Length: 233
Image (cartoon, rainbow, N blue to C red; front, top):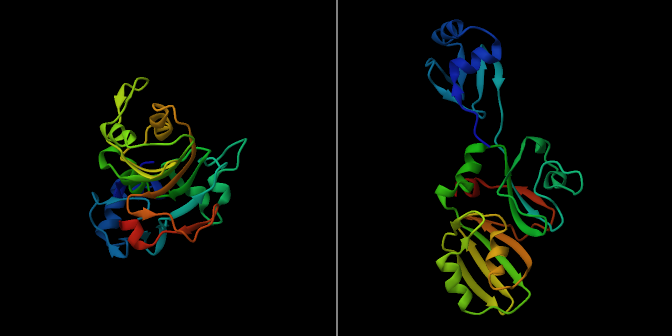
């Protein structure tokens, strides 16, 4: 979801239904404030979280929201669904309907899910060019061995998309458990990569996205607001 950015004069013109010529007069008189400062530049760029007033009247006062959720298995990563409980249904935040999901998890995957109303922040975390690492714990039906490590590191060709996956890191925890770090998020990527070994994934849990780690105090279905350090990491 893209951040809503616009020129200040256009925002005021649309909000107050006045001409941009009239807006220039308002700016020249020092009647407009952005984030508490008098604004005079018609070309100033504002976004959905800029606090904007006109002669003391608040035109916009949105607050950015950043949440982490411990997603349980059986809950869908969607805002609305006719068949399953959604991650939005699990939240108690009063403004939860404003939120979008940052990097979805499928129905049978648990773990860290991020939600926000800040499009620029979510794009920074999820855009392929930023290559933010996502760490997963994977439980497997059959034993794994060292041959998996090199195959994941080399990447795998997916014929349907005609792409080769970026190098992924695999660490063996025990014969049936691995930690996998991805720098991208292809459709069912982890399940498809282990599928090359004909080894079904029986459990998948996301531990972290970048420097944001799932809070060990959160039970499945619980959420909390991110700290400033987590937001800026």
